Image 1 (cartoon, one colour):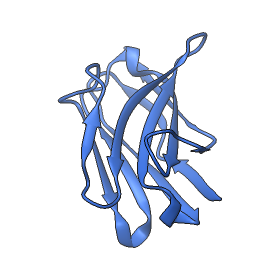
Image 2 (cartoon, rainbow, N blue to C red):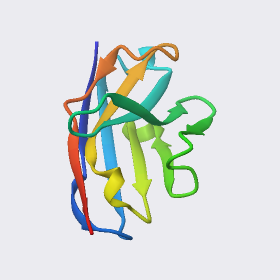
Image 3 (cartoon, rainbow, N blue to C red):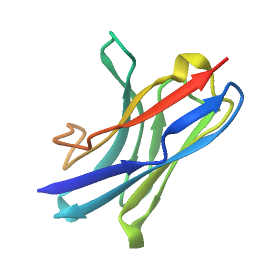
Image 4 (cartoon, rainbow, N blue to C red):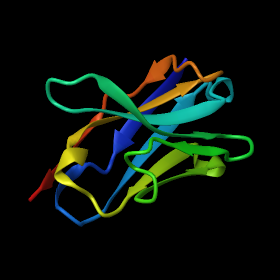
Length: 117
């Protein structure tokens, strides 16, 4: 089992920045890839970004490309999501996820991000 705990959410004005953190514990070696997803009210959960623990390979959804940056700290078993130039449409609950492959089997409880006009 892998436990994931997100932090760093909050309220920010449009154009501002936030950095989310996801701390992993437990059998972290079984988590090959770490990802961020988000779910806006009344909408489905969508992929945001992912990174692999070994070579740090990154991938982003088109909606956040150029504004969000994912990174990892292997020593701390922590993944970050730096979010810049935030827009009201980025408002959502952000979830951290992990898996031994690109199928995510472990999920955090989520952290709320609210971007005001």
